[in-house]
Image (cartoon, rainbow, N blue to C red; front, side):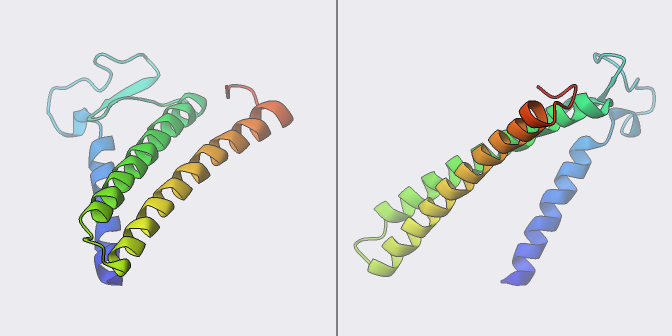
Length: 130
């Protein structure tokens, strides 16, 4: 079970690394800045900013978007498990745990974003973060 989870994590990291490889590494006569501003690199997932502030803003939007999508898919999966459990108490409990975990993870992401904004913008007044 642990080996399978480790393989899934490694596969996800590999996919993310492949998506962040600039297109210039994939094609010979490609310009890495095609279609992007001077401070962005054109990758397989779009223009990735090079500036630290812009990259942080881009990354936060990207990560929290993925987290919300995963939470939604886990909730749908839990509800499907619940509807196909046929009254089996163990299956219903497992489905409820899946839905509860997805909602808890989504709430943690939302509160983490709120705390990050509260600390960096309102308390520390770090420039460039909005």
